[in-house]
Every structure is written in structure tokens, then in C-alpha cells.
Length: 332
Image 1 (cartoon, rainbow, N blue to C red):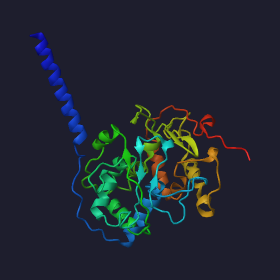
Image 2 (tube, helix red, strand yellow):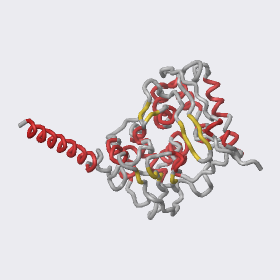
Image 3 (cartoon, rainbow, N blue to C red):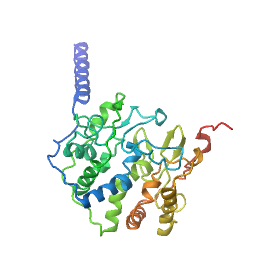
Image 4 (spheres, helix red, strand yellow):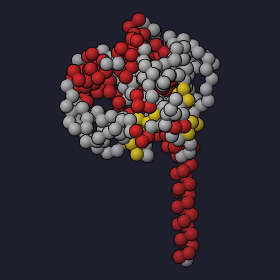
């Protein structure tokens, strides 16, 4: 009798677990139909879109070919928005590809509708209805206002179309199953009140992806109490870097910085934008978007600083370029 009950119990457990697995494996991500909106490319909208693409959003940092032998990895001429295959050194769970986002109709987004692009940017759903790998910061871009995402899409349409066929991202199991929970419909998002410095600063920090890079993670999850505390490791063939602590901790973060210190930290790189970035080795390699961010308006940098100063300080001493993790450069 007991053996039969035990066997039934095991069978039920197997069926429940199997059903749960089947649900996770075969389910579709949460999504809404793409909007039918047709965006008019007004002069003001294109100017705002340029700002979002090149500066605060730094879209080209992932979706372009870049020269990482130079400080800040400036975009290679003629390769803006053509896409990029992330190298295996970055240890992603599979092959991750930032696709071609130029208006080329065969290999880019030239045949996509405005609504399909909006859905991909803010909700993480590709044209085929599948979830995008969340290296694309759609969880942050979900908070991008309707006005701003319209401006971004309008500007994307103005990029020179470049034919550049790339493979699709291929994410390893079980991550490929779990990322289906990342996309969420964005609905309508109102514009942020720019007169509210802290709210606007929070908005810019969100669109700039500061939390994603400056918060250390373990197994893909943020470490509790370490938001913006730095120490996230980025491994590349050019060198290994760790993100800095940007909490207002006075000993290991920016707690002792003045607003002027913060502005000057960015402004020092403006000469590289104007004159060209110098050649660098592993000791000068960086993934921090200094070149786009140093061109942000003063008011925006001030708002970012004001918001960062309100965050919880976290003690976390970080060496951003640890010598023991750098590649050996052969002597000449």
C-alpha cells in the first residue's frame, strides 16, 4: 500500500516538475502588439534623437565597430550602427550580437515599422516576437518617455544604411529560457519634469545605464547593498576593467567630490573628441563612455551628480585596472 502511494507521489512530482519546465521552456515572453504610430521626423525630434543616440544612450557604443586601440574606443569611420559581435572574453552565456540598426532593408532595420523598433528598444522584443538578451538595456529604456523614444526612432532612420549581415544571438540553455521573463510592455510613458533636478538626474542615470555597469553582480543578480558601488568586472582582449564606485561614500566613492570635480572629470576628455583619441594599452583601456558623456550639456551632468549624491553610500574600494588581470604586452 505504502509503496503504491509513494510511487503515485513520485509520479505526481515528476508531472508537476515536467509541466513547470515545459511552461518555462515553451512560453512566450510578455509582450504587446507593436504600435501603429508613424513618426514624423521634425527638426526638434531629430535633434533630441541625436542626443539620445550619441550621448546619454550611447547606442553606438554597442551597435558599432570601434577602435579600442584608442582611448574610449571611438567608432570606426563609416561603421556607425552596423552591429557588433561581442567577443568570448566577455563570458556571456552564448554568442551575443548587437544587431545592425542602420536603415539597411536587408541586414538592418530598414524594413521595420516604427512600432516594432519602439517595442524592441523599450520592451526587449524582437521583430520575430522573441526576447532580446538583456545586455540591451530595455529594462532601463522601458522608462524612456514616449517623446524620447519617438525622437530616437526618427534619428535612427537618418543613419547611413550599411549592408552588414551578422549572425543572430545564440543564448545557451537555461539562460535562453530564463530571459523570457525580462521583457515587459512599457505602455505610455510621460516626459520627465526637467525642472525637477533630482527626477531629471534619475532619468538620465537610468537612460545612461549607470546602474547596469556600476553595480556588482553575482550570477547575474545585483549584490544587495552595492547599488552603484562599482566592482563589476569586464573582461576583453584589450584588458580587464572594473567599474568605479559612484556612490557618495567618502572613502571609496564620490562623497568628497564637488560638483566642479564631477564636471571636470568629464570635461577633460573633450579634447579627445575634438583632436582624436590617443593610442592606449591595457592600462588606459576603458569601456566607460567618456567620449559621449563628456559632451553632455552642463545642466545634464549637474542633474546626474545631484541624483548620485542622494544615493546610499556603499564602502567598496575598487581598483579599476588591476595589473594582475591585464594581458601581457610583448616587448618590442
